[in-house]
Length: 210
Image 1 (tube, rainbow, N blue to C red):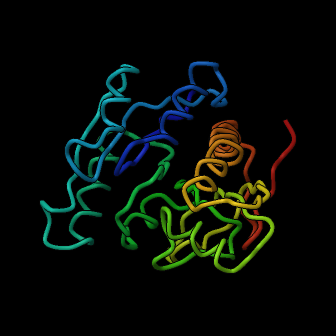
Image 2: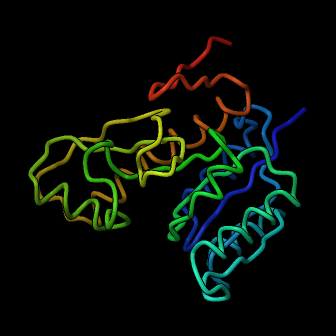
């Protein structure tokens, strides 16, 4: 039976598009994106979903008194949709523990750095690449990890390195990390999950043979 996937978005949805494209090539390991849920109305990602024929929903942060109240509403929506895997693709709201408790080792997030570098509170979007360049690292990349109650602290599924080049700006680096790493390993991780090939042992994620 195929796994039902919900992708949570806040903005443009470039990682969502990578997943939609992978699904079009039958590369999601039998999984199917059945819902795209945005944290604000008008997110461009909802247009991408509509173009792909995927139902879009809005659970807006501003409609709730707290992150916790929003998280509870989101969990209710995901359960109503009978979701097996939740993918955070540029989702800019910090979810509270109710989410992790409802979907243990079934929430994937992509982060635009090699965790544990340049991650945690305040490290999102362009800030991550600004920090990498300011520190002078030679290699950065992206990480797909399971979401735990600690921000960017869950077990790591896949990582891919990207070399920093002379003259990189945060914007140029952000684009290269997306193209060379995020758009590659996020669909791969989703596919492995949907094939039942990920086993979490403490902090380590083992990838089982086919």
